[in-house]
Amino acid sequence: MGPLLRWYYDVKYRAFRRESRTRDGRRGIVALQIDALSYADLRRAMALGYCPTITRLLREDGFHIRRWFSGLPSATPYCQAGIFHGENAGIPAFRFFDKETRQVITCNAPHGVQYIRDRIHAPGALANGSSYVNLLDGDARTVAFTVATRERMSVYRRLGGTRMLLLIALHPVRVLRMAFQSVVEWLREEWERAASMLVSRATHAEGIFPFVRILSNVIVRELQTMAIVLDVWLGVPVIYSTYMQYDELAHHFGPSSTGALSDLKRTDARIAEIWRMIQDGAPRHYDLVILSDHGMTPARSYRVMFKESLGSTVTRLMSRGPDGDRLPRPGDAGNADVLTSASEDSEYADVGPGIVESVAQMSRHRHKSWRRALRAVRDWTRSRYGLREIIFPEKYRVDARHELVVTYSSCLALIYFDDTSIQLTREDIMEVPRRAYLYRALLAHPGIGLVATRGDTGVELESPRGRAVIARGSEEVTVLEGSNPLDIYGTSAPVVRSVRDLVLQPNTGDIVLFGAYDGYDIVSFDDQVGAHGSAGGDQVYPFIITPPDLDLSGEVIEDARDVHRVVMERYA
Image (cartoon, rainbow, N blue to C red; front, top):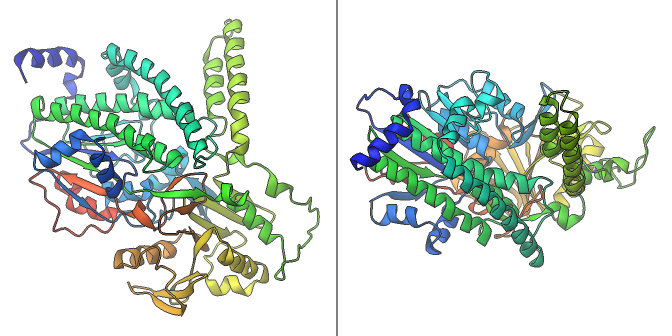
């Protein structure tokens, strides 16, 4: 870096000079996670020219790339807990039910992620470092857009606080660019949604997804890049940040869609910016690591295919007897609860109007006209996007009438019988006629490819093709009837072990469901055309790119915990 440019940064970041870290001679790490990008889809994006920076790092700078196995569930909370802490037990899905505390844990909500964070006791690899746009903080000193932290802090601080506001003030040109790009992103969303509908792979738009897309693809991506560049200049020893934009688009348009892959080009450009600062302006030697936490598999929406949510299916089946006849109950009002939209249970329901209402409440009482205008905006937002919420499927269903809870995590679903606090085995389920009927009906349902339960000796697996068991402590599948139910999802030792451990987790469902998989598409219980959570396809095969001095080709990486062991512990 030339003296003029060095002087420019010295002046620009003078306000942050007190944060400069001690030059201890140790190598630092900048780890950039591209959320949900599989090894195969990264290779596809590189071949199409969407990732020129990553391609150059691999071809010209001696970086290494390898595929690894994420473990199950193939979901960010499980994987980030493993990467940051080497501890990820008790996270059976992105959404699950805790029978002991009787609460639904959903990682789209801060209280759900905090539930997970509070139960992690191992030290984090980001201590004395920075965490940007992550679900967990990994014990980082500096956080921004991080959902859950070890120490309680306000939402303002978790969003970056005054430090982030000052950083924004120092980049007026970027702010103008963000404003322009926000308009472009809105138009791009509407165009891509219309194009997807024409090829019949679209799902109904989430109510506030256009706002979420602008926030993540424009504003957050710019802000996290600014913060990383600053931290490199300051010499922060450990920096970990998640670029979540591909995940959002791949869920809505497919993991190999033009929209999802082309967005990688904008993330690739931010990686180039960070790499330049590492090379030219860093006060310490940094290793750049680029990785994903899991992949994604093309999917078909359960609700679109079968005209009802999985919760509606389960409730309908539980309303019928063992012989299929409907069982009336006292006060039964028919099928109203089955047909009712569960948009009130959505993590996103009413978020947009709620933000506007909060701003209105903060304004002074004498500004009555201003408050009226804001509330008019609130009502317009609610009416405009509330229409979409009606057709936006539920993320979980709590059915008090039948004492059960159903949670969906993309192509993984968990069913809990809530009339008991203990975990039920297959034998327990089959002893109750109504539950046995539900089990058999789900097994025969064309949208469900695998039904897994606990057994006295291990894990029971069943599909229309056959029945099998995985003994506790074993990585082999013993087929009892027909063919191996895991054949289509994978039968390697890591897959078998991960399925076994998933079903045996203390807070997983009494019944575990994988969406039906045909070798290309998997059925998603959420309204998605790209899915992850279970096994099957590329969703369990992410990538990791490391610098020349960090060759992992000889390492065994068969769970996110292994990334903590072979990479993050080196810098902790």
